[in-house]
Image 1 (cartoon, rainbow, N blue to C red):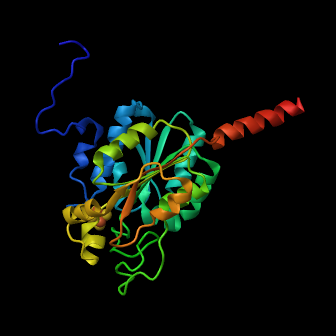
Image 2: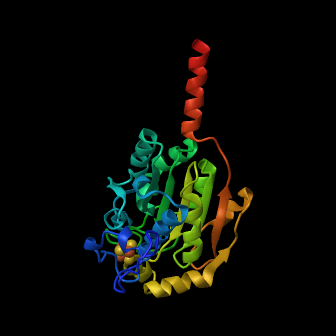
Image 3: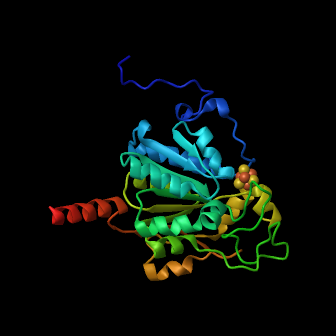
Length: 288
Ligand code: SF4
């Protein structure tokens, strides 16, 4: 056998076994939860893009999705609620050679962490932000949050959510993100290809993943099991790649209405670090 020949894995092992902390499996995720699909897609993206293992860093917050930091065999940080983006920002600024991904839920990123999101996008911080959007706080009992659709039921909106939710792609675009995509966990191949495409890019990149939470959102809103929530997506998904910026406001999510998915934004902007280095060099040059 040559040094480069592929070694056949024992049949009981998952092809990504060497990229997972197998001793910590099975996961805590409920049957039918979509987070594992998103984790698998991100790991695939790292592999396909050829990101060296020692350069991969995943920053998780608090909540079900944050468990990625225990299962993916990479350098990883389990941070405090809402603070994935500040931690990711610090890591990237201290060591620009790292490939940093902030991976968190909708409540974490857009309620307590909302301010961090808009300012990191405005600065064009060089990180990839992945939002697991299951429309509620799954781990803590299914409370409503900033992406809960208007009228949707949750444990804190038993008469239907009276608030309007954030449209996350619209928010990311408006605040300066250079890349914005939305997929559901039904779109496994597109999701994997998206990660393979964007993990090595620069600038503030945002991927929203609509993810079944059958034990909370799915159950409360009578959508049903994880599979039934996937069928819900299948029935409502409308693929519109490269939505014009003027159209991005039309990607709102409403209960029972079409869900627009696709790559919505792909543009170039000088990153925070590039700009910082240039500004400092100019200032120093002018003084010498
Ligand atoms: S509570 Fe919801 S999001 Fe959390 S693991 Fe269970 S299904 Fe997934």
